[in-house]
Length: 108
Image (cartoon, rainbow, N blue to C red; front, side, top):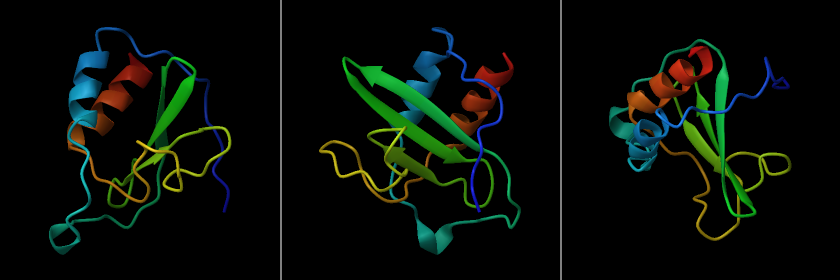
């Protein structure tokens, strides 16, 4: 299976950034004992931001457990497999507001 990009990259409006930053600050390891997941497939959303020369990608599954994975290089490094200091490897969970904010930024 291969994921394909659908649509063009879009900038996030400056008014949406504070809400996304708040949601991103709440990323945490998944609570697998109490996790609810659906069985469908769906889109995967990617937010890419930069600090100076560094890019960081935040990939959110819009399906299943709504898992979040980070990548230190959205063009080269598989999400969740980063080894760069400061980028958490593996699977994380975000509040539902992050996916809602990404969808709103896409359509807005």
